[in-house]
Image (cartoon, rainbow, N blue to C red; front, top):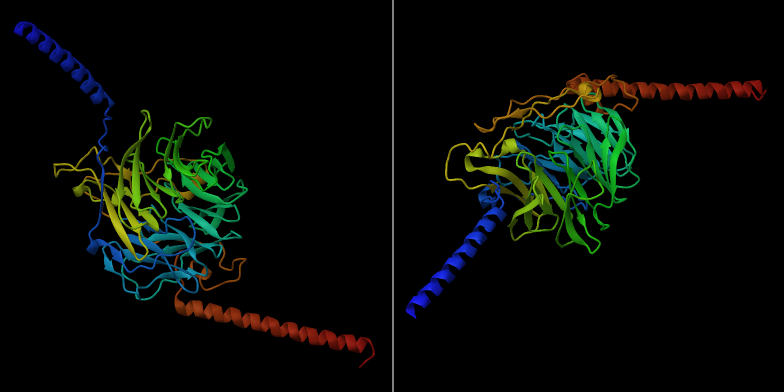
Length: 494
């Protein structure tokens, strides 16, 4: 009897071991192999945040924050116009209430964007229908910066979106509430391309990796892919998300389009689309129920997209791959306070010694808090697999080459020794004619022939123009008097 029991139990154990080995093999095959399966978010310590910043309360779905390896820029509350604050990254702690702002717009600033090819150049757009380009000095200014390098005037309503071209020097895109998209050559201050293909408000614009195309989302619920140099929409999709709330769309490095939107039942939703075949999504994923628009921030080096919802207190991140289900949830960084906006550091600004693959700057009501995304590694050596060569600050194309139809990927730099920013370079702006068709003003005359005019010469020019205007007015009055006298004489009244 004991012998039979032993046979029975040994047979059961062997059978169970066989099942277990099959299950374990299956689980190993199911577990996705990726070096980014474990990405951890960590907020900076309190003394590494930027405190006492009055973040703008404008009701516009912008990120309100822009950052690069040198500076942090935040749109702030301002009386009597629009302003934003620019701080060196090293200036952490409490910000002095008298710290000089960048002022110049007569209406609230709606969007800002750092130039990818010059860390001292920042573009801004505003409700006052203008866009401006600013040179930010490396030293702390002693008074507010009020003189832009160039003022771009072409929209008839507020300008809510501003984006630099990823590879061509001095090419800047603006989109306004007049439903126009204008592409400028900042070096001459002139519009190169104007597109009027959108019948309603444009929600967002995203260039592709080499800047040959851009995609847009619009209030008419269409996702469009535009070729600016042909001045046409080359592909479009009606209602990629069925909800009526605002959508966002960004190009991935492979040329697909990642979208965020809402379902018909107001659930937030993610989508991945192939613009050459818009019929069916590559992936569609429902998230949660919330009113906040999801702002996507994409890292082309790791193919990770970070989603920050306005009013949320969390940041979700996903990896986009070529294997099903194509959009893989990684994790969520959560904190107690909701975010007003978010800035995303270019890859060349992260700390490679800490295996940091991304850094986001979260705006609270009164402060800005850096959040580091890291992949834990035991070794202190440089991790080649985490840091492929990334886009550097040198432009791959000149404006004329891009307009002639040439395309080029960004010029890459190695992250092995960390990133050392190049020395400050000035943006050269050359107007074709000093006496523009617009009335000459102090700010529009400050960008003539590549350098700012000396204050004394500028004052003299303004004074001479005023004197000429006064002379013209007095001569017009004299001519009117003479004509009246002549009229009385011919009528025999004199």
